[in-house]
Length: 270
Length: 103
Image 1: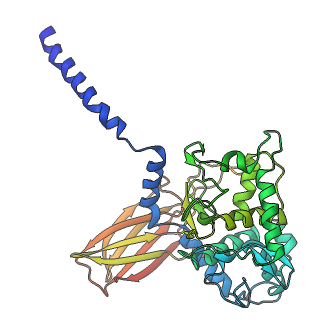
Image 2: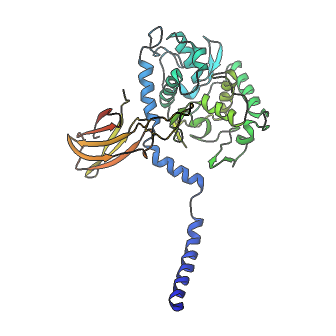
Image 3: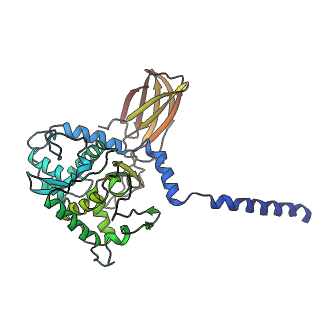
């Protein structure tokens, strides 16, 4: 009996030793996630929102029964391509710096007759907020691959950048957190997700250049407004108002920092 | 009314690679909503694909398939210009069929 067992143990030890280098060669969590993303890239469900968004853009809706085709996203009425990578920017008609979502709210109010305040107060994923998800997917997809180039010529735009910067580093709440606590240096992560350093350009398709995105875990499409809202939830701050100046200023800060980064939105997130 | 599928069919070698993205909730019937009530099951039960009208794939699906499912398969003998039809039926009896041309 004993003789029979011995070679078995030796064999087990040998396989353990052989297993050691294999363990070291195992991909890191981040690489694993990247692999998973590559597998899903061809079937990014964000495409479903893009298609819905395109239909909603062209479909006459709202009390005024009008489409959004006359909506000026910054590159002239009806121009969708290339608009996303220049937002947020200053708009003469509203006299405000606006991001994509607040600009869409303006268009939905002025062109279609919707109540922008009511849509802003609607919880994410319900009613016209669902329309918004599809629209941001459609508009951002029309600039896929283009590089961020937020205008900073207007004093209002430069002011928004400075306000955004202040908000980014503003520490408060029960955790004494700021955006910069997690996004202010390299190599930070939350659970298995690597967090980009948003105080500089984190690179093509990372950070600001990756949103809106489809979230596999919840099966929802999130715009930048929802992304920021959830960041504030995680910091245990009060929720920021939808399309509020504070969220837009933060977007200006991140967008200007991402100058030259290629947009991959709508992307795929865990 | 269900949303259309996104079907891409690409000729490759002696066949075609077909990629299908479906829009479906795929509720398992195990989740509860904010009021604590069970969200009723709602999922695709059968998927089929046809090449120029001839069925080449049938699959029985269940609640283990993710929301907005993506599926990919190879059809032997498919050439550019051929028609690929994909259909699904869900447990409510809803049906959807979409077509794509092999490119």
